[in-house]
Length: 117
View (cartoon, one colour):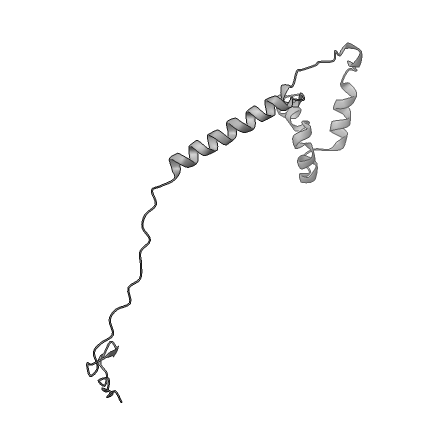
């Protein structure tokens, strides 16, 4: 078999090749039949995984405190100085009798002066 044929037998692409019709199940069965049974020669492998080991409460507390301190330091550096909030000042009302601009075309009728009683 050539290298490309071995790549076609890879389980990660085999189903896709079956769907496309580029690989027949008889080819896969013939290849599996030629493989030797090496189960008796295998050896179990044990790899330490510290991420899965149980931790004590003291380590967890130290990690929490370190994380809180890091978040507080980042927040203190990232917080900008508080800027004053702009305030709204209502414009003064036009005096009585002055023309009022209703629209962009010019002044409307002047506001009539009302005498106080």
